Length: 276
Image 1 (tube, one colour):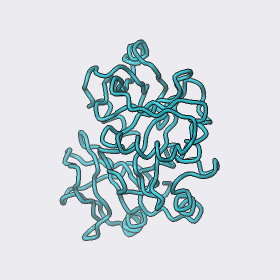
Image 2 (cartoon, helix red, strand yellow; image 1 turned 60 degrees about the vertical axis):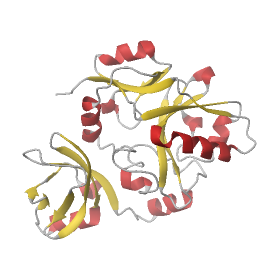
Image 3 (cartoon, one colour; image 1 turned 120 degrees about the horizontal axis):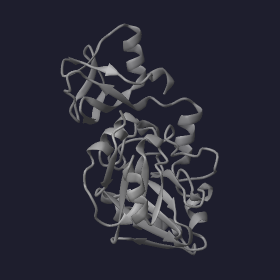
Image 4 (tube, helix red, strand yellow; image 1 turned 135 degrees about the vertical axis):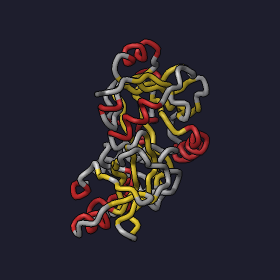
């Protein structure tokens, strides 16, 4: 049964970017540029280090005459503001942190209510199972349990919950599977590393879904096959979890018929790792 939810996301912040050259300078910097976003739509993107690690990821809203709204991790908002200002160079674009705005999400009956207060709203570009995403006036109901369960089921790791700045490559946290990288659009920071991994099949790690009965999965718990470490749980709720793992090691363990465990308890894979 699909669980409805309507919640503010207080761990998110909003950066507004406007001006005649806002889209063109961003197109050269981030993993999926704003030039392909339909009016009133949204896209998932990220800013990488030159070495290909994720500095932060974000959802970009096309807000029409208001320009672009970036839905970003609140912990990285100031750093992102500084970096984007640096990358802007002499482009005609205004970049500002909007403390008066926040981010909310809804699925089910709450979607219509969310639309009535939204300055920008669109289906979550990472996965339709996450419902509607919106930029709204700051504040609102804070009840994230339903949203958190939905993103785990949708295999959507999230910055601040599952990873931090410069910890992971974009493919480690499924950016390519969630539409967050456009390998064909041209340059972006970290493109050389990201493109090489994509072309040469260098993806060794993925974030996958796992489950345990009874519910006994905790963030940080190590996933093993026998004595071989495979990875670790990054977030969990009600027995379902996301885990960042070595997919080559899991495939080898499955081929050998080895059981997967966390803290000695049996774990079930909810994804076919051979297709990730």
